[in-house]
Length: 103
Image 1: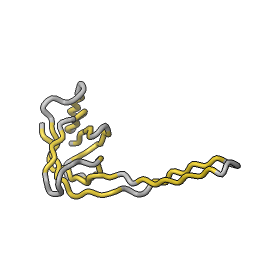
Image 2: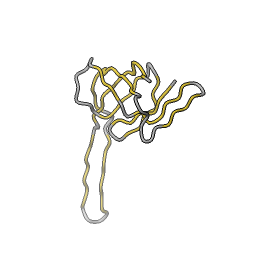
Image 3: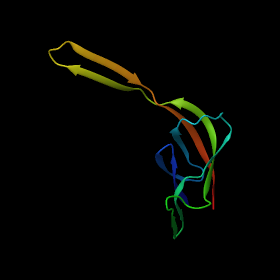
Image 4: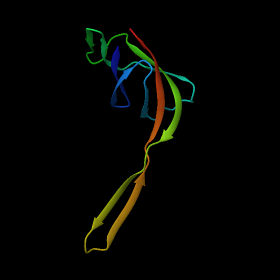
């Protein structure tokens, strides 16, 4: 059994016991998170597609910790103009573990 969920505009395929990184959620590590934007639910041969979400379906997750992704470098340059810019960015994320898929 797996579902497709949406969190902060990003879609994820999750099953019970999965660990994944989602965009930063403002909650403490160890707390519980309920995601109610379930777009699709697959249970064996039964497939339920939401319009836009599956009614009454939720996913419960446990927040493990918070962190930052690998650094992404943005470099701009214009030749022969003495123009160079270098910028770095590290996206913050929340690591969660899927505890249960309800309904």
